[in-house]
Length: 544
Ligand code: ADP
Ligand code: MG
Image (cartoon, rainbow, N blue to C red; front, side, top):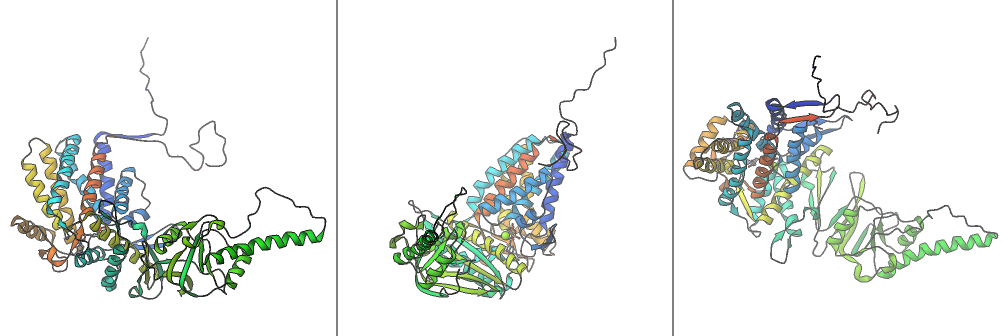
């Protein structure tokens, strides 16, 4: 009897499997490809990318997270790189390219070690040690940021916007970013400053020039008044914010009302009209002369409100209503019967203004607004869109600098210094982890090197000069991409919040470590749209 060994299938048919070194190589290659894509955009001299989606819509950007988001990346390892950019965007609002480029370089350096037969688990351990040490070392090379030090805050905003397509109006936009953050600054009970970026609403409208952008001491809403007879301008506005409809609700079930007498019908209609009129009366009686509601407003109510000279906008987004509440001090009213004078908010001026063929409502001259709007203008849709991304970076950086209270020198200064300190730390280690810590330090050099490359400066010369200066104790020496010289970045005012670096190092190292620890990629068979890959017992037909 022959004993034939049957192959054992533990995975369904069509499953793809990639194991060992080949899996690692594939993951690293995909991650590096992502980093390589955004690398050319890093820094003030970075190039832009033009992305065209399947509908033909165009986005032109220099912003790491925007580019990666638009690229619709599919590879699982590459997707993890996109995650890095997203986390960076959510946590800081800037430094997305830095974080992705760093992760790519960490993996590239790891690959060299793998080729030298260092086990990925050892590299992962060394990277973890290096990342933890880096966080400590960063605390030693940063500077304090005082919220009253406007020059520093402006420098941080300027640095964030350098190289974005807003150069011409950079000064003005930097002022706007700093003022906006200072307006919404909050202090908690233990005197810690914080900024909730949701309280800074960035509104964009094409038309005009970037120079026409402004900080509104209040909120701009992309809505117009509901009735043409309402006033365009209301001074000393008493504002009611409603979360209730100014309409008569349709019954949910099909109710029938039987009338035998035409007078009954008239009475019914009269009653309805009275209810609607009462709504307008209640608003007017509260003393409100401006209302914003999240829901709808019946034509008749609009008419009564207009007759009373009350300004009204409807279907206002929830986030806008919340911002209005913070800006004007109004309470959001859920039931019209509860409306009281004390619930009303205040604004010195509510005005409907026409910008680029569309009307918007400006609620401004608020007394002490805890939420503000930044209105960005610019020649075309693309210009305002990139201005918005630059502004998000600037607002994020200024907020991060204030809430953490620390900043570091830009132009690669921080990375070169950190690499130097990490190399010294590596010397204190024995075993193969030492190699991994050295590789980590090596990876940090990618930032100044890329800044040089993108500016057309010889990266070897630039790195040699930078390292020499740091060896002489010039810890703020960074690359001036406009002259190619290594200069003191603190003096030049090229500074960034510490949080950009701590967050970038954390997510880049965590992702690199996670990818290094993978030695097996098992991918389920793709669902086939044509139905060929259907489970046998499923009827052909609708796709799920
Ligand atoms: P990210 O998406 O990572 O923020 P950026 O394109 O904004 O990428 O580039 C940020 C890098 O550019 C940082 O390393 C910063 O220090 C550097 N940088 C910004 N302004 C200057 C400047 N004037 N000179 C040199 N480097 C600068
Ligand atoms: Mg940036």
